[in-house]
Image (tube, rainbow, N blue to C red; front, top):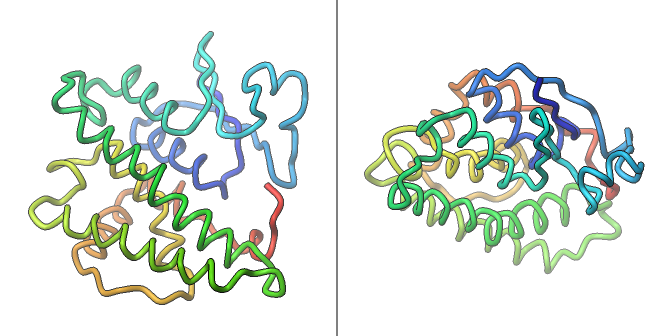
Length: 215
């Protein structure tokens, strides 16, 4: 059976669990990281020498890093459903996935969620948070424009691009922050929240993380 290590309140773990839910894959979730710990044990480090979650084990195959896991699971278990075999069809999905990890995630997850929500007020760098909010708004404005003529980020159906980006939207819309009016983004978010796997694995309360800097 597929085994998944990580904490359910981790955005990167949520990406993996969301896809697993979409694929309806039987799996065992093993809490790791955060208050549970376990990332520095020899057994865990043998799977991921970097000591971070998520990590999966699928039979004899071990994969770490969330987007590598997404690509593996989609290729191994999803056929062409979320990540097509055709390189031309796959390229825009990969582009948005990499952009999510190198542009959106540093702006929102690191800059806003960590810099504001997960940092005690007395320790916050308010100027850095303000810049991160601007960068996040810019990133999501680009997604809003991309959605002008399609229901999902790349095409007519959900792909790994939607998962890489959309896993952050629950927190984005739940936080008490200023947000620009982005009607297409909001409509897309509505389509995501209608999916059972998204509701189960992404719309997870995160109050225990407020003011808490530890992984």
